[in-house]
Image (cartoon, rainbow, N blue to C red; front, side):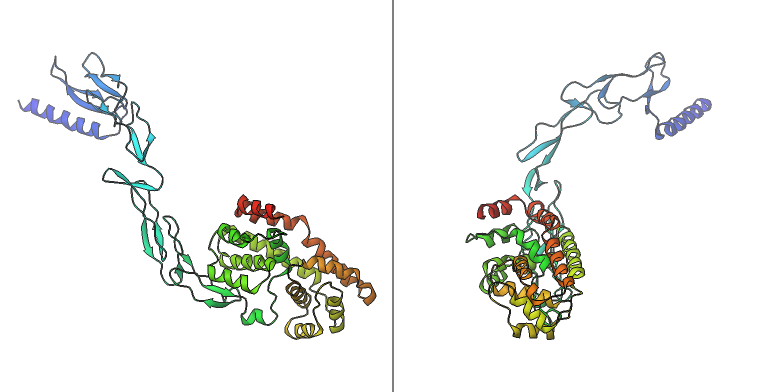
Length: 401
């Protein structure tokens, strides 16, 4: 009797160790109905059910599950599980039923499962940002924007964004940001006030691609609505409309938008390319050091409203020698409304011979014009107004031409 008990305990110990190991196929303990001997039978694999236990003479017999039934693990059951019925309202079939997997249903995009219902993800209101995006299993988690961050939209995806740092951009704070609005900057800080080149030649050459030759009343609104990233607020847009001519409005809007979105990946490359452009312009004309009379003669050669001697004198005092021509070109553009600065410069160059300008000066100015009218600038335009903003603004611009 003791011998039989010891054998049984040893066999049980062996069987426990065996079944605890990850053997393929895994085993289970079964007693032969004829001999009553304990046997280690193979379990049935996923997609099948047990039809016959193993014996001393044959192995376990497993047969495939019928249609609409499944098993998804190794097991010893003599029946398969019935697949879940069709998906409920506002769900879709993420994985269809087969012999090894149950049907998996999931809530549609923008919804999550709550008590058998697919509810819409929570949208965080202005002043709150998304800290955990919603999934098919859980709702969106919102949190109030901390100091220095804002959210000006109702969204189920957008996090809080950092306030624009005006001082880093060399700008003044016009309106301090809060939880629902970004900081508004203006181009009148001490660092820019001294010379005050508002829109650079590169920005003008680049932004001009966005300006239609004939303006529709809602052109600026279309541009505002379709610019991605942080939107320029209505107060700034109205201020731009009141203070600037039609073409200048687009320049000022795009410049402000560029500053507000400088941390966005879509804008970083644009800013980098414009900076490279401005470095090239500086190489072409930054070395030109003209006298007061030469600068007056240069501006006198331009068509339209003239940049007077008083403007030239103020520019000589406020700007470095490398900035003076650029500042005077900016003043001429502002005085002449929607005129193209490069066209004005081309017109002026035709009349410079009578003023006996050094040949190196005229050559440098011509190189600048060629560079800014090159294919490079059109490529930059394509990046922003065809790839980033999309075809809607481009089509509106074409219709205005």
